[in-house]
Image (cartoon, rainbow, N blue to C red; front, side, top):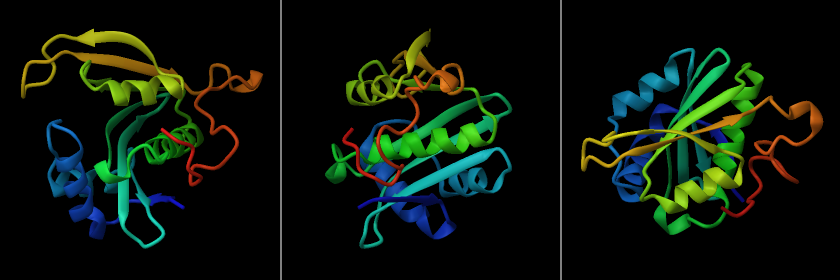
Amino acid sequence: MIAIRDFVPSDVADVLRIEHEAHPAGHWSAQDYEWLARVADGIVLVAVEEGGGIAGFIAARSMGPEAEMLNLAVDPDLRRQGTGRNLVEALHNRLRAAGAERVYLEVRPSNLAAQHLYHSVGYVECGRRRGYYASNGEDALVLEIRLRASFSSGNDKSRPAGGSASTPAGS
């Protein structure tokens, strides 16, 4: 069972380890995560295994009706168990409660697993940033989801389906 909770400074070593093992994205510093967790518009959540180990994390900023998912990573040994989906759904719930209506993110076109996850929870492509990733000049696909657009009709794909954010749903 995975539980989602707010990041605390003692999580930083595990978050950095997961980030470095999980993907080739630009790596953040410990201070970046600690700062984002402290600022009013910042959100850093961690997925915690029953034994207390950190399985993954997600970071975002909420700016009124818009938010941006900045980083998501799951321990490579713990993928395909719903952790990424649970983190995204927990983030959506937190952002929705804060009044966000849309969430944006950038993803590498080569990162098919991440694209599959994002599309499966309702993200759609809305743009492309040419040469966005400095490490190799790869473009970034810009994806968005509208959190409140269809909420009243019951068709909101960003809402957890049949469970809470701490229930594995398979990513």
